[in-house]
Length: 97
Image (tube, rainbow, N blue to C red):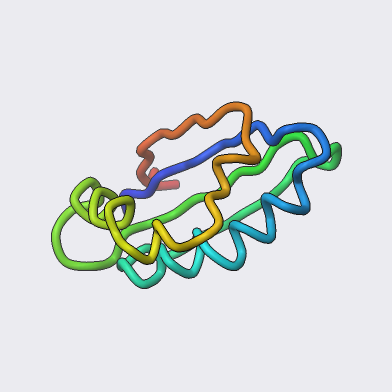
């Protein structure tokens, strides 16, 4: 399975606001575009947040991501990026054990 690992450095004191924006906007709106959240976590010191998402719709991940970012749904939500200092993303795939 191909997925995207996203790791964020959250601005000091902004984890609660970020999580509200993510839970009420980014995560469900991505779901409308065929993405599925496989896992999400935050560091104990509330400085970092990570999540792993897969795409399960028609077409490829990159096309779906462009559609998500260009959508009116994305434009209408509270932008969680305003609460972040740094964003890192990697495309990853499962490895047989």
